[in-house]
Length: 407
Image 1 (cartoon, rainbow, N blue to C red):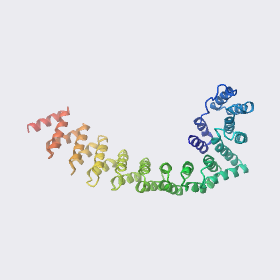
Image 2 (image 1 turned 180 degrees about the vertical axis):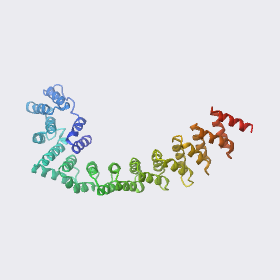
Image 3 (image 1 turned 135 degrees about the vertical axis):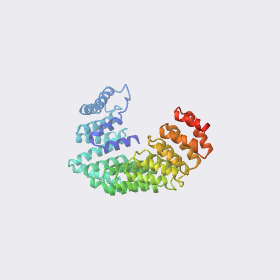
Image 4 (image 1 turned 120 degrees about the vertical axis):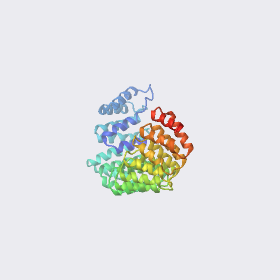
């Protein structure tokens, strides 16, 4: 599986980015210090690491020519092909990879070589090679067929190559691949999603929504939600709202919620606010929605948090969390905390508010704390306020305590 993802990345990215994939797929460690090709292999590996591809190709070729029975020989043809591909010698790369397939069919790197061959032929097809184009088309068409889960790496590479060759022709194949439901094709569907996400338009967003809601793989659904979040279109927002409100798996719904929160638009914020208030949603997701809204610095955020605290219809857990988030705001929140304290609230909420008012230690908060200590009808809350006043070193607090003791 590690090799598959590396190859898919290599195929999906531009030629200039393929070097990063090459570094991820490290050459095998020196396998036998007594192997006659050991020294040559070490030099070839260093040349490849240094991106000296012409030299690396010649050295790997020397291993095959001089030491065909070396343990390094089977993979040397793959690395020769890779080096030639990176240097732009596509015909030479094809020859090396096809020779490996014929001479060393069980080489450890065969699972990487077959997709790389398709990738190289895709580049040749872009240059007008009719035979190469036919082979890529054939491999890409096979990717949409149900049945045996064989050659998935090749099929993924073929999709990538076809996308590079003809972006319009790849769309029908992407749809067919994404309609597959067999477990073994999940990595292929993920690759198809990556290609689909590079496109635009409402059709793309509708297809992503369908995958986000119906694909049997949680990982594939989460990828679809991620790409919807990157789209930032109105259709994408509609799709993410649909997943959040009507999804059947909380993990995917949570990702949709997060994607909406990252958009920082009025509409996305309103969706999160409504979801936090609405009955029926999982409490953990409603609290997450509250958290993301509270992180936004819009002027309306404080007012909305106050409305949550004051709402008798909201669950007490949500209201207490709103108190906490409001208390984390800047100094202007002192007025909001003091104002909502005077609402008709359960005692436990007033206790939370009183605690956070006492922690702020600004003039507005101290004024409210003194007022609570002097006028709050609930004796337990008055005692709490007196306790907090006693911790203050402000002269006003001392005077207030004296006035309460000796009115």
